[in-house]
Length: 378
Ligand code: SF4
Image (cartoon, rainbow, N blue to C red):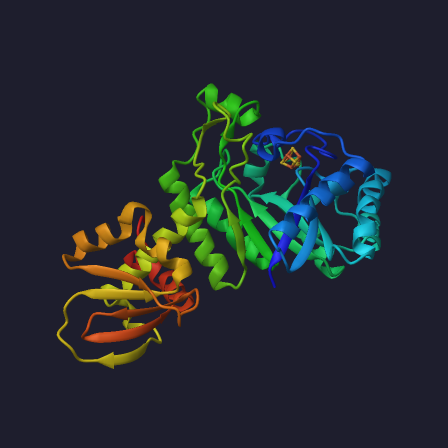
């Protein structure tokens, strides 16, 4: 069922200090101190908008941008009780919030349960203690492990946010983070490659020449590796890259780093390219591919995919088609097929027509990677 989220931003609320990369005022574009009245206004506003858009599905109110469970307990109760009438009336289905891993206590969880909070998103950033320390997070990887365990044992849905590319982070430590996060079995993950935002500790490091963010290309490739690992392990990645909030898009707010308003599409497009190349090169021979038919003249190659994935396969400015055609010296066509779902494709070169499942190809990437660079950009 489609999830519809009404965000209520509480920038820095509860945060014991500023993490080195964080500028919530620019990320969320919000400044206001909230009370019951202002919360009601925000929710009513979103509900009227959703009525106009005929939004249906599961409606969740989300307290984002701060460390909810690090707030004084009375403040947590005030915020949650402001939302309660909407839950009682059935207008809203549940509540979600984001918080720090070192502020999850049994006492807190009892309050969250009382107000029917369903989902808790933990700002994890990294599972490497040296990266956490350099980012001035003020907690360890073990705090993440124990808070996640506690949340799961109390029946909460758990989301984890990671931030590759922080000071001290490397390709290997990002992969380590992904493996350690997978062990925690979160219900979903968000990947936010680190960008340098003005008025942060990271901006100071960057301006003094002590920190260099990932390039966009490296961040896309790294995010691709992370996404593949999570997806193969059945952990949904529900977001990659920061939301292009208008406050973030103002001039000179992002000083440097891999920001792109369609970051996910760049990642998906690279995966689509890798898949097409892999199938064309015949490396998919060991995959459980279903050969639909054989025969014909062997002229040209067509990939049929679901209409939702058309732009990912074609690539921005037809980049994937251009790359494949120049590498293999033949024509490639990409067409949508209404019978195919996301994650399904059919390869047809007139000689052979095969049905492809994205997940099987991604699994094979992981098993081949160590030996023959199945994924581009190694
Ligand atoms: S990253 Fe999270 S914990 Fe750190 S300052 Fe920002 S909102 Fe607070």
